[in-house]
Image (cartoon, rainbow, N blue to C red; front, side, top):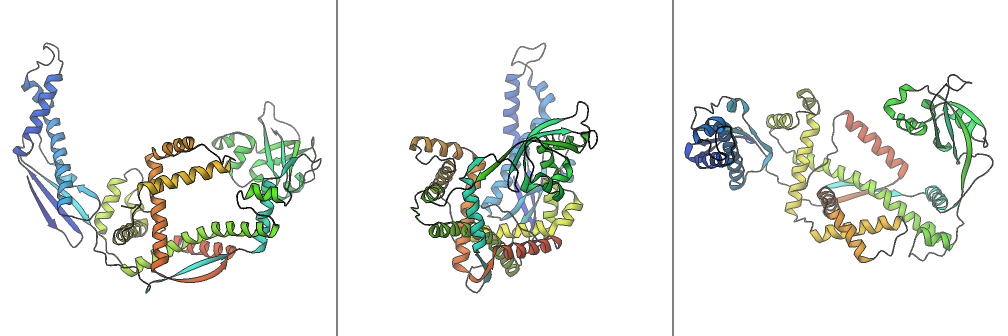
Length: 468
């Protein structure tokens, strides 16, 4: 076997793999003998079919299969031995391979196109500055969240007349017109959350309604989406067109939550183990919780800002012709040449960011250990159980939950990625200069929405990457 690497520019190469008969004869003969032992054919005893007949029947397919196995190993080992940092996977030269005559040829040459990653010279230092938004939590937000908590732990009762925050339960009946039900029409019982009704005129009709009263509505106009409409009348979204949009809703009952009182009983339920005694202390606790949630959104935005900054600093060159071909070959069902061309800026920046991220992980010795993954899963399970009021779970039961999640490779990969993200985030905050800006959450949402809308219009990415 002979492998020759031809450099086609700084970041593309062609591998030529030359095989002689000595490279594959042993494997092919071994596989043909195995087939002979297993073969069953009329006129011959099992395992006694002549070798020549077996070769005539299966020789070409066995040859092709064994040669492809040898090629796969040879290319992989060459890349590993030469420490080539390749992008994507080697692409076989299909046109050249199609010219092979498997019946008569004894020596073969195969070609593989390689995309080579650029050299990266990047160090995280204080010379790199990035804006970091500190989200301020206003008192009105805390008050609204406090009311949500009170309702969550409040008591349900049935008032006689509906208010704007109430839930109505009743029956939907398909109508022929505004006054007559459709013969053998569709009926379904469901809840209606008045606050989520989009049609303001309908909302006014429902507020003040009482059990037994009826309202005719256009269900398509009542709520935001077709999915909500389908759920409300109990049908599949794709079947909505089979029904008249006019439905009569008959109120059967009204449900309202009486908010829980602000006392230690509520504080202990909403913040177990915190030993909160006063309303002010409880509000302070809620403000901290809200701040953590908002800051998590700010951190995601910060990571994207770091990404943009580092991409701009490094300006990594890529083997674009190879990448276009690789994307097309590996995503035949999802991508076309037109789509790749249209979105190539996004694809290429995603490749660049993946290269940078892997470089930073390697250079800064960022690693995630299996015990960290198990601890993360355990904390996740405890948090989930706590939401359902199960805080004193026996250790053996907790271990069983953790083992079940840890046995799922996809879930474990997600945990690894999350932990890598956390460690990279800590690295960015430690090494870079953060220009902190205080901003309200509403202003932050507006800023981010406008930015990403602009980026979307100019095809700027927000990549998801793999850690290696």
